[in-house]
Image 1: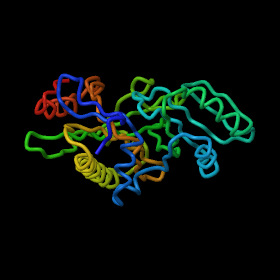
Image 2: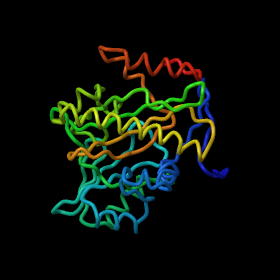
Image 3: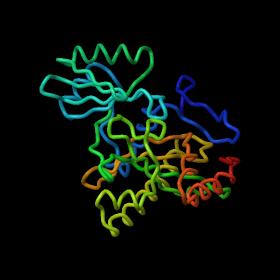
Image 4: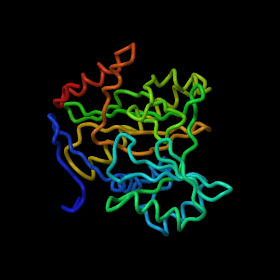
Length: 263
């Protein structure tokens, strides 16, 4: 159970669905079960020790606000011949060593908690990186259903793939096909991600009550392996309205109406 100090808020929205802000707390929930561990990239709370550890193990590391949303304030860190390159939005800065880098990240964070996460080499669709949103919704009977899969195709010059970071929305099958995956693999991956979504719903229910919907952000790497980047408890699907085929949007809304969500 969560303590009063942990960032939990029952819905301030028009519909009732529990919301957990802390990405670290949600990652810990999943890591308790062996089933999920293979899907979770290495993730640690931000500290000087953990920064040095992550950068010694991985060439790319993401610096993410624990309670952020929309891809805002995410920084990508890359090892270079000159030291370490920090990228926020499109701005890149290089630091000679981890001490310099830590001071700048610490200044950026201020009093807000941040995470460090292993960078995933995303598969690319027509040369653009993308990740997948798995929308999971609960029926009036209390059953979790993975209702919609769609892709967020990023702007190559940006750090995050989110729609409000200049990304675009795509359909799962088409995006995956343009990334070079064959039809059999795409069908297999769709089934795996839907199972993963339902399992995540059950996991969250064991830790806290009142969830009606979840949105898994899943990266598929260049080798076709899926990774859960984070789980959103206030997932948005309104960008689906801008697809020519609105069947995915209508499906998500139809399920949402069962717990009071209309858009």
